Length: 412
Image (cartoon, helix red, strand yellow):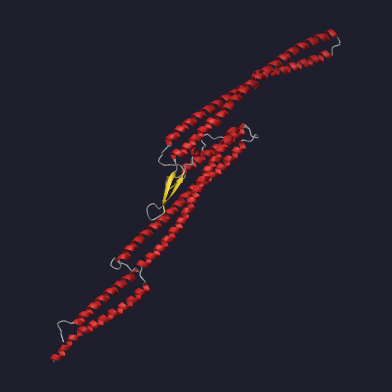
């Protein structure tokens, strides 16, 4: 028997240390719920798990980004929906203004509301914002605005020419009305009525004269009155003729003004509109909807102000202007409808993107759980085994430490 080296005790100590280490590891897993608590538990599993966690966090944020994109689109959609309603009302008023049952004054009243709606559409384009970002003003960098300003100057010149001719028409028409109802015409017409009354009285007087000489004298007076009457009628005809010539000149000026509006002004407005849409360009939004680069959805939102829709020179105070405005409104409705269609398409795409992101996130979380999470039932089994082994090791160590004392019996 050897007492300097107690191999049974050493062996029991080693197994007890192993069992206690295993017991600590198992308790750590049970208390954290994780199979991998440090790289030493499973180095490859930890690396894979961390990559999956990064992917899961990124996908969750991407889903949130897509939802924010939908919120932005819904903001724009609401504004454009109201613009559509105003365009409907503007079209209704244009059709109303083109009807002959309305006077020029009636059309001016319709034009007041028309211009207010145009102003409100322009105001909506400036006030529609999301997170302090304007959405309906086109490219926020200001690119192309200098070209727009130049075309606006051309339109202003065309409008100046139009209103100059319109002013000349109104002035000439005023002269015609003055000739028709001025003091000269009124005095002449009053004189005509007096002469007609005097002539009628003389004719009655002549018919009642029994003396032929007296009757002849009265008839002579009648003849003189008739000469004066014809002269007055000639004067009235001359005044009416002058008024007619003035009206004809006024009609010619109005025709020139209408032609300027239909051609020069309309062309300048169309050029301004196309310049706004081409040179300024849309407001671009990129929605990051993936966990990596180049995984985004782009949305272009064009400017929807009065210039982009072509309403800089629109009015309905005349039938001709209302007819031109009707074409402009139809074109604007098409522009707004096309933009809303694009918004709806991108929104539908984002909704499907969110569903896919959420599904991918769920599957990745399941996969990551398989790698990193502890199987609690299995670990409880391991803990039970470890406890039994640890207790057995302690018991064996105690017995092994008592074995050398048997030597004392030999010495007794």
